[in-house]
Image 1: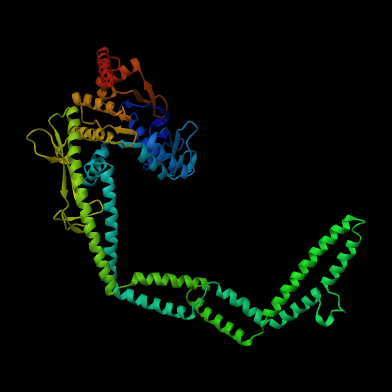
Image 2: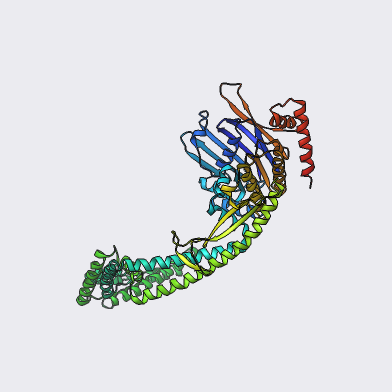
Length: 585
């Protein structure tokens, strides 16, 4: 849940802190006091769009900070994502979030003690908080949102089926688009393929090997300077190990080292230090002997072969011809050839390949149609359960005769989506299937079944939205729910029922409600009031917790605008008593 929210420099709010609790938190206040800024602050904290026009000129930036404490699956998912990005929860397990917006429109975010992109706040918000307001009700009127709502309700098995459909649809469209492109651009593809084949033929004839240009350069240098290399190696070997022609006249390094070793060993009994030096001279003699053997092997391989040198020159020239055209070095030429072979397969427009793609496209089209039919059947089954459960909730929201229907209809063919036969009917199919979903309301017996946007008044739409949220709450979702005046246009008994439903939600979720209805506010576990201060040169607002008699006075103000009226306070206390009784399990 969200334990604490601090807002600084946002709209009429200068600096205030909202201490929140589990259960139902209600935020009330006079019109214009700044209740909307609280919801705006929540939106900023969880990655919403920043509006620089709401930032106070002094201090020139708005800061929203929050402390979030999560549990279970949501905590595992959020904390793992934050950890991957370099952040971490506090020692007490809570997660600190922060969003800063300047008057120039610049925005910064901090999560778990680290600076992060604003999108990270959005990722956390998707898992932890769901905000519902008038705009969310309008969004629910869109067919795509209604379909998404039904899919969410249908459960994990339906989501798995939907994922399989999306994967199959993506593969099918890729094959169809590829086939169309090969046919449409056959001439250009064949021209490009001819150029690639010419290059591959040239490279194949030369057959370059990895690193061959460097190896040939080294060999050419050895062949060009063979005589000088031989003279140097022979003289070095003569100095190290002597030679047959000067064995008795010219002392060599090996012989001199042997004489020195034997001389020191003769005196090692007198001074052990000379014995140690003699041992080191023996190691040196061994090293000199090894060098002599390697010089002999080197001389044996050294060959001043003009024919080989000419071959190396010609080979290097052939490789240079390739590197001038295709890459900077031989390894790059080989990589170009590999890419060209891959590209040739992409450019193939042969009849055999086109026939193969046609068959694969037809196979995938059948798979998509089958999955779309199964998704449609799953939606229809979920639609009945969804409608029944929402209707039950509406009965408890002072709409006892209203019914919700969820129509799952085939999408007409001929629109932007491709058409496929699904369950024997030609329909337009997209990645989410071939269905159109429409929520309909029967306001009372005998009334026509009308789409929500036509059949529901503002107050009825608020209650339908709340009923849907209560149904969703039973199937998981974010642990914190925010309702921004979803009770607009509602009063009387319906307002009391909305309070009851919100209180019921608060048993399993943290609920934050911005409301103008005392019937709703009475059900709160914590009541916060946004109050405007006009005593200074600049109007500001702050938030305070109200309890006991203060709370009754606030409800009296909401009831009749008379916080000090004995009758209003008595009525408020009666409301609080009823709500307290209803909140008991």
